[in-house]
Structures are given as C-alpha cells and as structure tokens.
Image (cartoon, rainbow, N blue to C red):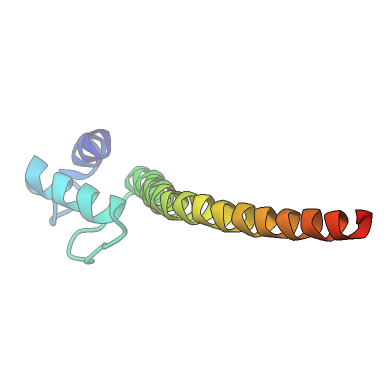
Length: 106
C-alpha cells in the first residue's frame, strides 16, 4: 500500500486535483487495496491506473488468502472430529464382528 501510495502521489500529484497530499494518495491506496473504493479519489493517468490494478489484485489476493486460512482452520477442526466419529464407529463394528466370529466358532 505504501508503494502504491508513493507511486500514485508521484505520478498524479500535478495531474489530479483530488490528490493534493501524500495522505490523499495513502487514503486511495487503502480503500483500493481493501476493495472498498469509495470513488472520492481515483487515478486519471495510465500509470496511476496500472498502480490501481496492481493494488486491486493484491487486495483481492490478500483477502482471499486470509479467508481461506480461516476456513481451513474451521475445516481442520471438523475433520478431526469427523475422524474420531468414524474411528469410534469402526471400533464398534469390529467389536460386533469379533462377537459374531466367536459365536460361529462355538
């Protein structure tokens, strides 16, 4: 975000009336990276738009990785619980089979 802010500030500070300070560029980078994009500040030059595309893709990637990590933590907990349930059921079935085999031998 900082690199995007610096890049946008350097490229657009004299060509974009919405970017009058580094703070404006930083605000734009934060809203763009988090995919909020209020529309109050937007790039007008080709270079600024390329920076925007990079920040958008980065933001989507970071948010995707974060949510996938959280989801995988929940799934790992469920898988362990499911494994334990299956193991208990297999133990019961094995016990029943052993009892049936014992009856057959008698």
